[in-house]
Amino acid sequence: MPKTTEQTLRRALEANGQRFTEQRAAVFRFLASTDVHPTAEQVFSTVREELPGISLATVYKSLETLVGCGLALKLTFGDDSARYDGRTEPHHHARCVSCGAVQDVMDDIEPPEVEGLGQTVDGFQITGYRLELSGYCPQCARGRKAAVGPR
Amino acid sequence: MPKTTEQTLRRALEANGQRFTEQRAAVFRFLASTDVHPTAEQVFSTVREELPGISLATVYKSLETLVGCGLALKLTFGDDSARYDGRTEPHHHARCVSCGAVQDVMDDIEPPEVEGLGQTVDGFQITGYRLELSGYCPQCARGRKAAVGPR
DNA sequence: GTATCTGCAAATTTTTTGCCAGTAG
DNA sequence: CTACTGGCAAAAAATTTGCAGATAC
Image (cartoon, rainbow over all chains, first blue to last red; front, side, top):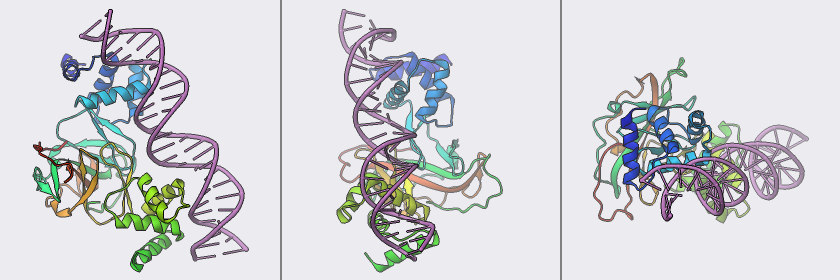
């Protein structure tokens, strides 16, 4: 866990009037180290290996704190429960329709730009977007014919 | 409620070995008539005006049935609970970051096409995509400066 | 007539909250 | 020190399930 990671966390917490704690640090480190977009439950069981005493409620509270500080994103995919993303740089996600796994994809899969971004669409003032790809992950991709199109 | 709507429902149900019921019809009609992407709870309270005896469990079951027949989509936006979409044609969504409302947007806001669609990206075999715009709905858009970019 | 539904209530699952002791600053 | 936190257990919210009576076909 590089010092810079802790620095980042301390600063962000401080900037939001929050305190630095071991629990928050552990949650943040785990989120920052993975790209699987874990659910709260997954964060809990992983972090517990390191901090056996941590409770699920604390994980939820820590996640909420991190989201509030802009250090993580709370996302939902398809019809699953909430998942957390420790990366705040622009990137998109691909979700396996077979096993439900969520993976990051390089931002450059995205076309030039979404026309109308920063403009008004149907009365909506657009400030951002999120692209979710569906498909089969490497493990599940076994002899399938792809049907392409938005949904 | 046009006869064609009922026809559509009957055919789809039949094709999936499911029976036509008043409850499913009411849920379907409501979904097809709105573009607000209601939660199960919202479907329940609206449909109950028409069928006072319907139960929430039945609404959940009906929604699942409709999704199974391809007559509706189950979606999640941001960090909210599951929402249902009665439209199956290609279109995208805009979500108000202020009030949480979800609105359909014309498909042509979408750029030409997502490069790599139907191809393999990072080992993922892509079969579809979903675009979610963030912004301020007409009601909430009041003197704001837009910061643009993926998130 | 018979397999499939609905409604109800109870069970699960997911997330949030209240409270007191513990700790960061 | 003092306010903010974490852990625990209980609460609330969201969704699913079992079952007996009702209903579509």
